[in-house]
View 1 (cartoon, helix red, strand yellow):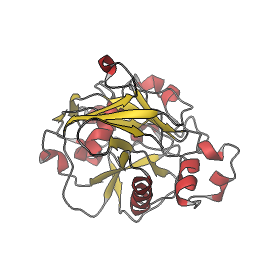
View 2 (cartoon, helix red, strand yellow):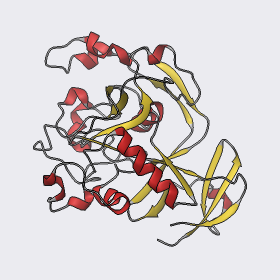
View 3 (tube, helix red, strand yellow):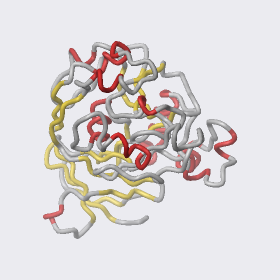
Amino acid sequence: MNKMLRVVLLSSYALILLPKNQATADVNPLTVEVDENQVYARIPAGVYMMGTTALREAAAEMPKPDPSMIWDEAPQHKVIFDRDFYMGTTEVTQKHWLDIMSTRPGPDSHWNHTDWEKLPVTGVSWHDVQSFIAELNAKSDTYQYRLPTEAEWEYAARANTTGLRPFPSDELDQHAWYINTSNDQIQPVATKQANAWGLHDMLGNVWEWVADWYSPQAYRNSRTENPQGPEAGVKKIRRGGSYHCPAHLVRPGYRSADTPDKAYSVLGFRLIIEARQPRFSETLSSH
């Protein structure tokens, strides 16, 4: 794609991406297409309640219900995002990874799949993901890439809804690749219904690394505006569940974590994109 974009930063808190000559009334496009590998959806600024209050209801889905297993989802607390952000509509695919890194992580069966280009990349550690992001950032004068924070991820997954899931639980099959729908096999991205903000596979298919260190006490000490998580830790958080998971692990509030060197065939990631500085209007070419 060779479209001219106007990147406007009205302040250090306001990101606006404009196709050239677009009317200023549409200052926040619903999506930004960088290239064939990357489409990002606008996640609107707003307020939500992060975490889970209905721990007993959530635990009731477990084979052996035990609310103490998910106590780290409490207390529910207010989170404010003071600006829009743009999140990948899908997990990063194997094609995108191969184009940037020239490596083929994860099981050979994923790369031998008929639709290998459309499968989410897996078998990447949190550190591997940082290397991928560094390569992307080195190649782009227009965009800055990063992982979402845990708070951003849950906000985007909930998509302005409350409850255990952003839809009735009996509709999970329509929205997620999990053990009941996947035949215990990874699936091409964007083959289930998107959520209200245009994001596919936020639940199921593969777990997704996020930026934050894990702490079971994080919600008791979290700041309200644009929280970044603990300053240090041992494990990094992963969210969303996978094609291998039972239903009780496939919901926006569920938290899991691994040391950042771990890499699994059920674990991938998606990205957030931001406009690079300078602060003020400048016409830039997308790559």
